[in-house]
Length: 185
Image (cartoon, rainbow, N blue to C red):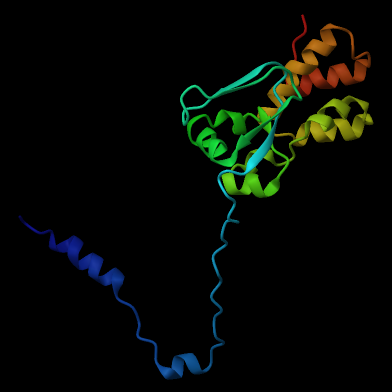
């Protein structure tokens, strides 16, 4: 097989390094090696409370265990899943985390699963229910910072409340319509 000498020569040139002498290191401060950040070890059989943040019935069908299914009937329902099952959920049905369909209040678990980025500025179920009771400026700030998945869940929930006239502040309704794209007609 013919060898392309141009590529071989270029590769050799880029690999050459300067030898370090005692004179070079004498005037330099020593470098400190940083230890890699290690995940906290959590047993896979740890039971984790998972709250339905979706405004309605939420069903999880396991791809790990045949016939295993969890049904959260209403928003705010809590069920317990093993950490190993949550790992399977993350690998096979990532939308549960990306769209904030379930809430997990344990930061160590979120870090272990590698999904904490989806929960930055996410609200708990109780905080979602109290959102409209906050002063307008605080409510609007929390909504603006909310993750995209949680915003779409909130959009569904608040559209129902606006249609049912459970929200009566015109200022709040106008803000929610513009910020979340709620259509009530």
